[in-house]
Length: 204
Ligand code: ADP
Ligand code: MG
Image (tube, rainbow, N blue to C red; front, side, top):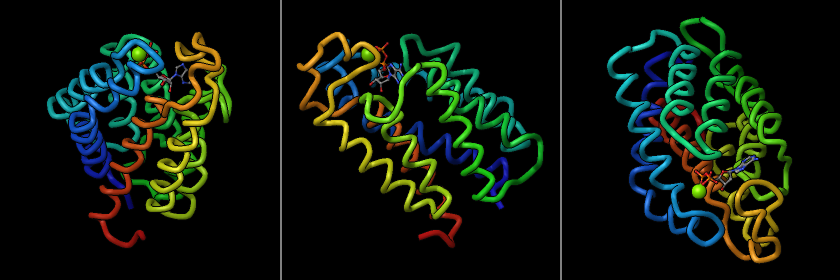
């Protein structure tokens, strides 16, 4: 079972990954955006770990809804509201039980990803974070490791796509040949989940 501590550790691992990869994320965003995705994510997840440490929410749902609220209030641009919605909606779907199964998390994450699609009006193949998140949520029904692989493959698969949503879409065909920054950070988020699940044991 995955308790509040597990979700807290997931968010801490995500913050560390975003910190480590901030320059890379910004470099990707400088090719097809405005070169702020690394700093956006870094600022947002630093705020998340700070408030989680202060408030210590006691259920998985409360950890994710608090984290999502922070991202919405601290991160400007497209990614803040989109990631905030992902975590808030996932958290809401988990309800207020003290621990959840990986299967419950997979279903809740599916709802969070659907909320991102609804908010941003994007779908699979539009070269956005959804190209990592949709296959990851699907594969999470199998294992944490499968979700990580699906997210990483999804992020890589954005390279040949033309962006149809967000700032990168302004470039038209010139967005082709670059990896989407948001899909890349989404793969980091899912890799952090797999890392946290791996520490727990039991998942390949
Ligand atoms: P901004 O584009 O406002 O500068 P960021 O650089 O932080 O915000 O985030 C850009 C990322 O947000 C993109 O790489 C893409 O993955 C994601 N994104 C942008 N618009 C959408 C959308 N409508 N739906 C889903 N994801 C989107
Ligand atoms: Mg940007």
